Image 1: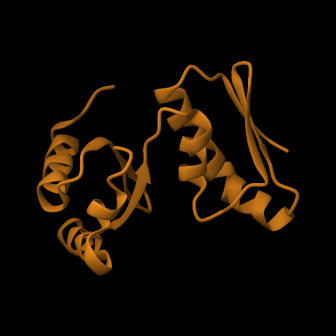
Image 2: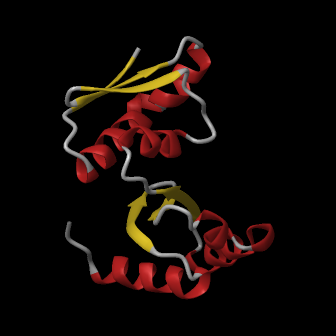
Amino acid sequence: MKLTQDTIARINLFEKITSAGVKDCLEEEEGLTFVIQEGNVKKALGQDNSNIRRLEGIFKRKIKIIAFSNDPVKFINNLLYPVKADTIELKDESIVITAKDSVIKGKIFGRSKTNLEKIKKLVKKYFNIDEVKVI
């Protein structure tokens, strides 16, 4: 994992304002996504989401927070939040996400499968998992 100077600066500022440990920072078209240590979500959000609003003002971009977990199933559940899949299972070297409702399945995929690609990229980055399937 290579970090640029800008990414390191963003992580340092995020940690300074929130006092939450950051594992990674991803820059995307829609904003910045911070992967933080498990159990630091409330600390990162701040009282009444004040930390997030403050950071959005500083970065002038939307901020999304994802809690990291050493359990790949729980991590994918955190990635999907607030969308609730019916089941998420780890089978061999792949993850199977089951969603019976087509609206929920559509939210998991995202427009042009952007959400699914983001999930695959993050899961592959942190875990030894080859494939993520949605059925």
